[in-house]
Image 1 (cartoon, helix red, strand yellow):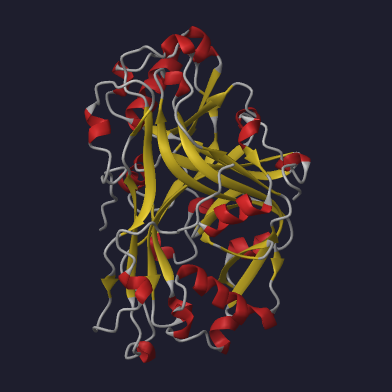
Image 2: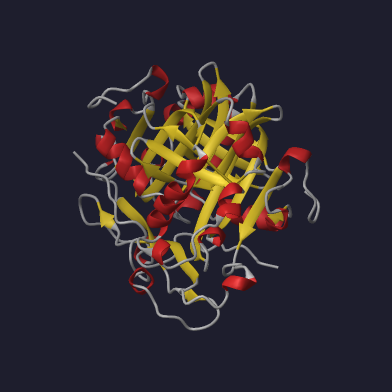
Length: 223
Length: 223
């Protein structure tokens, strides 16, 4: 991924091309703000699009699941496409036609590879850090059987593109004087009141700070 | 879609099968709570997964775009898969292995068809109602050129499945006495302060009520 050039032809953003971004920093910040991605792949029944938890380590996006997962089995022998989308707002224009949405998305093309057994424990720790920093020192870590039952896959971010829309509506000049409210209705994913399960326990910082907070702090730097 | 039977073999939820739902009411409520979906399809470059705005009319999910859209062109001659996912919370278990997420998702398999020209204006009105009820009476409607430049596609919901996880962690009995906080960290998409564009205008109800509200009221009925 060079500064702002698409890494491949199929990664090039074509529709509203000036929304395309290809630099690491932008791609990473969008991936890091996500708890889940959508994975597209094909099998003998057609194409599928499955949501699953994800996290990033360096230049790879990771997913995991049970060894029995059809998706994980299908992914290890073919190309796939992984997409992350954050919806940031509804853009209300003066004309129906120019209504839009603000969003940050990343599309990754490539092939998943199996994460070797000896790296699984460490990668699952990274995943836990992504969910809640510090929690892996509190919850019981995966034992040998649990790790053995889990498949981790990763896909390189090398062939990825980001697409971002920000700001207000772009109306036609002739519509600017219309007597209609125009602007952005922002959308944010926020934390609600933690719901403890079972017996009372000491409440860790990341639980205490959850309610009312934006779910992931990472915001994309807008040039 | 009969009461709780999958409409086809490829629609059957296999991984944690008791989370699968196939009734209309559940599928509709998840679709109606969404502003966007992810569309998976294949072309000569491989599989793709593209986020796009969506809305429902009856037993169809609709998308739209410019006539020039590669995706829309590619979709009109092959099968596709459309997925909607609402992330409702992080589930923190007493062991790393049993961590999970609460979510509502719908996966639709099928083929898109082109919405005939004579129905486009009405369908775009339905889309506008989905974004902001009543707004289509305020914003300038699409003119003949704008409608002609827009392609609408729809895919039947006939072959769809919902998958839902709710509630707290499901820990192993041996872990229940561990001194670690367990429970759910809820996630909700909420509206932020509206950002008006340009000159001051009368503020419609749906803008006034936006900030602090849950973005879409529809919640799935949990049996």
